[in-house]
Image 1 (cartoon, rainbow, N blue to C red):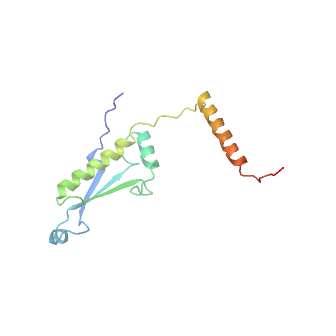
Image 2: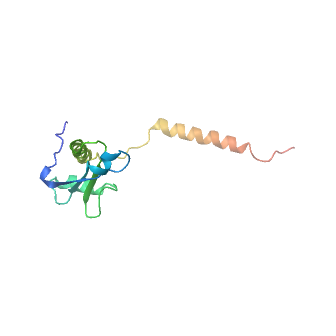
Image 3: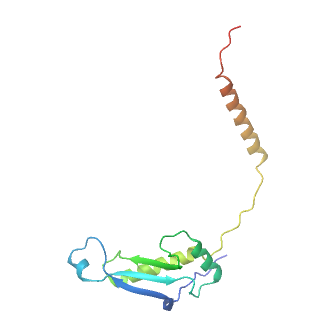
Length: 136
């Protein structure tokens, strides 16, 4: 079953340009090429189950208020950083779009039980040899 990837409405995303960190010479000091993307998960138009799974992620980029903050500064161009931030946002949203399959408990097979018991008896024999040596 193929599922159409979810799209985030660009009107719900706030983007601000900031100065990038790290090496880059004069370009880094003059140009605001890095991008801060802010996405308010609870106020978004995403389906409720997707919002719950997004907020349940233990991700340091999601604040306690439920705002996802992404910083993109990989590229020298602000446009490329903006596209990178959007791509990472869509990737994160689509990673939780499909509900995880529920696990159904199963019984161990007869063969696996036999192998387990065989291993236990071998270990028991090995340990039994470690006792005191008796001389009769």
